[in-house]
Figure 1: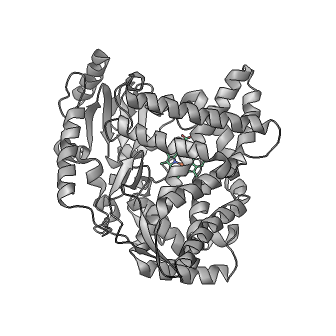
Figure 2: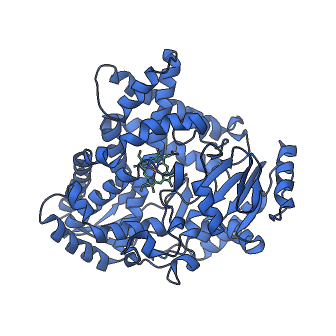
Length: 490
Ligand code: HEM
């Protein structure tokens, strides 16, 4: 492994790609930890406050910031024995996103692959094409339009629970921890639209999945979920616990699939089952393939949608003028009725706010790939096996692309879409781009618009004194101490 890693390194160096010196087995992880500790120390001195400032990106990846200053926008480093090429040069980023997936796919030693199994999110090549062909058509806009009622019901459930809380306390503003409620909303939507089950019936899956995700981000022991090859197999306490959680999740999904034998549906689950049963697999292999497919969907959908809604509400809470503007728009667009697929298209201001929120707080802060063959990016030959990292959240703040106000919340920049908002719209990547772009972005946008329009028409929001603004990367970008807002009926 070491020799392979050294060969990759010298191939990159010979082409002029510089980077920090790496130690024998741990690569640059010790230095990354040292830089991170320094950054955490500074953060501790300036304890997070409820003030929402958007300059958080460099505290997530301080070593990348440091190295890109030293070595330029493209450099090489090592996470354990994994060789990484960091790419933030604009033309090269464009090439990375558009590269055919068969040659530049998902990293093959993602720690979490072992736990959620092969599926649309984790596979490459023909396996990935098989999963993408099943999943993508089920999430086309035409299908998503048929899901609007379920999304409305889930949003109404959440709004009603907040109304009860407010009423129960005499009708004044209530301090509500919104992030957990938003996770339930997002889990309920995906569960009902794609798997025909309510949140309460699939609760075990979500609770265990969140616990697994937390442990995975902790145990990868570096800010990015790729690290020492083979690390998930070490018999550590964390690894054992992760295996236990993964087993629980698989068994809950298995039960759900079993129940489907006694009912039919026209949803994603049914499409997954039908295709697996036509593959000439043994019953056990077919069942495993179905469970893995479902697991990949749960993992890729719940948290990013919940966190996008959460960051948008935090931003709106600290910008009350935008709440008023959206309420105004809603009263014109919806004229007192609940939103439907057509009215959603006319919510221009709300759309701008969501786009700005996804720019400042993209839940997927780093795009990662692996050269599955020797490939060419820009003027460089990238040897097979090298991981490529694109820092999405950093590109979203690049002042040369977005202007001097890149760190500010200014939804009006999206008045003419992403092409009017910046010089290079290809660098706006909240849903990724190219062949591996998010398969669920239609559903995600419909969820966000319905939820936020319903919440803003019933409540006003302010940042709670309990809230501490500290975005952290736990696979997805989330508020470190949860998100408390003061919620009041309008
Ligand atoms: C606002 C919410 C969401 C955001 C910001 C988001 C973002 C992303 C991003 C950045 C990727 C990776 C793209 C890449 O590596 O190039 C991705 C992949 C994916 N997302 Fe989403 N996502 C969201 C919601 C959803 C939802 C609701 C679903 C529903 C099923 C979903 C399903 C997927 C799938 C299946 C993939 C893997 C696609 C592939 O590799 O072919 N996402 N998402």
